[in-house]
Image (cartoon, rainbow, N blue to C red; front, side, top):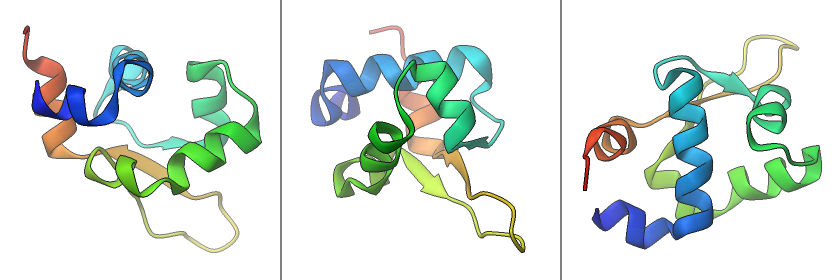
Length: 83
């Protein structure tokens, strides 16, 4: 519940949408665009925001592949909380 307050309702809803898709699967910015129904620049800006670092982790890039992002354990546990 604390994480939800920290991130705000809009970001929380985005994380919930991601978790519904599959909380354990890393997502690229392109995939998050579809999940969140946002433009690429908007997704990029969200992922660069320091506030989101507690909930989303950028994984190491492999060659020229796009960066993938993963919900942190803290975020996944918070998303399971029914409160």
